[in-house]
Image (cartoon, rainbow, N blue to C red):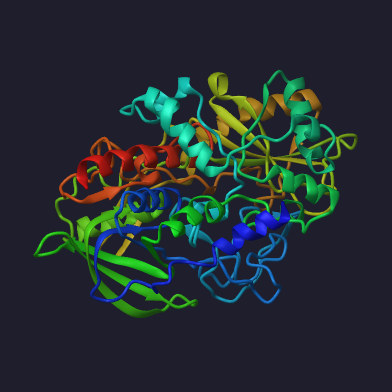
Length: 518
């Protein structure tokens, strides 16, 4: 499978022969952003015979660095690791009481730690968006929870058609339970399972987009290690089936999609002859604008992620570029209830020095306590006797983006205190486990004497909510030919890791849009 993984990488290195989008171009469809929503949109439009320009603010990530690898390792971050920062801002900022962030050269790296007043939002930057930097946990929500996630969407069509389509296209698979029971690299997850079950919580295996055959070969040390070398936050060089290995080769095979990395959309406004005038800034690798291009697009698809799409739409409405966008733009933003925490285990419960960076299981207390906790790795290379978790909770708090005329920036009014309901829901699991095991919370992972990782989210959702800011298929209110088609459509929570839902919703929406609008 090593050859197949490398071949998948090579496919990412052969974009359509045409170079980046040219100044003055006139295009039938412009897609802003190349994450899940953007790639679904580009592929299905191209397969329907539409020529597509796909613009992406981040890099292509198809060229190895000086170490021969495309992506940097989690334990040794370099300029490839962060988007235009001069110091890393890692989700786990401390270890054993010591700060672990370090200075790096400013560069258009892969992970953006975007800071708002009360929260840091981690986002992928590059062709592939969030798929480049997530843990690959590909979870379809339980059907009984779907009505609370997308109340205006027919659950039957999602579970019969679009979730299966998304799962197949993304290459979703499940760990071999028998292998899991003996794999050295999942000792941490087996400890998590044992402790969950001892406290009466169900432990569930969670689907993932990792190549599990490659994982087994990593464990056997017969291929270059990737998940077992701690690769996750800053990209995965071999085994993970990011969009670079799934949708992107299909997109390139159509011959109808031109991809322009390091291109950022600054303005969209109605064009006098119909369609939209789009101003695009081309960036260099230190983030400077080198060229400004103006193109005309018949239709524009906003797929810049929940934060990117929301910020752009709020700015365009407030500055008069798209004044007819409705008042729902920027509203109903949530963090998917993300809360992180670590627990210190007893000396007889070691979690292992070799830990796969790809999680494969979780603790499900959603119905009773409003929390689903991913049993996460701490791939430090040493024994820590620590269990680490990323919880998704039923946190009801929602924030709003707004235009700040004084700073000419978009603000988000999320407050750190709004994480408290999520913390309380996570405690419904971990207080009970600690009581049963006689263990305590770790206080050295997020600062000095700080238990909860309540300052961040990996799962931004909302800001251009379906059937509020848009119609029931993502057509933006007020303008014909403008669409939102990413995580901004989902109001703040999916009850599980969101990318399968984002992909399935995009598949549903673009099918309808192609049938009726093209």
